[in-house]
Image (cartoon, rainbow, N blue to C red; front, top):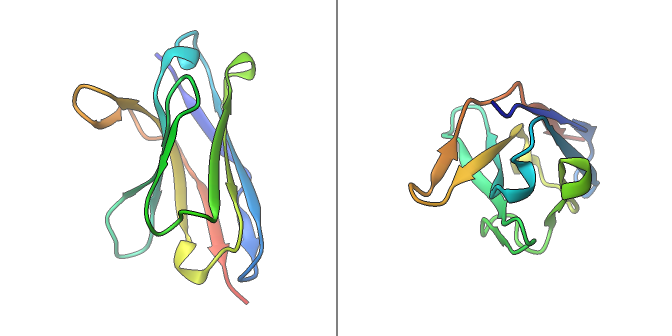
Amino acid sequence: QVQFVESGGGLVQPGGSLKLSCAASGSTFSSAVMAWYRLAPGKQRELVARITPGGTSIYADSVKGRFTISRDNAKNTMYLQMNSLKPEDTAIYYCIRWAVLSRSPLGSWGQGTQVTVSS
């Protein structure tokens, strides 16, 4: 079973940047559609960005133009570059495989990485 470990979160001031990483175990990463989700206090978990094995990506409207999702299949790693961060980006960020047929997350959630945007 593929497992994911998120890292790179932290405390940053509004307007700052962070780069999150998602390290995957297992041999199926390179063929998987992958996604970043986030869970903010008092809110439902939401899709932030999604990327195909070939690198085609989509973003939530709230992060378009500020966040960039990418992947390195040789390293079994996915990234989320977050620029121009806002307080409303504060959340725990998770990476997960995304099932194309059911159009939903596939598998178990990891520990996530906390991102806090505050002055």
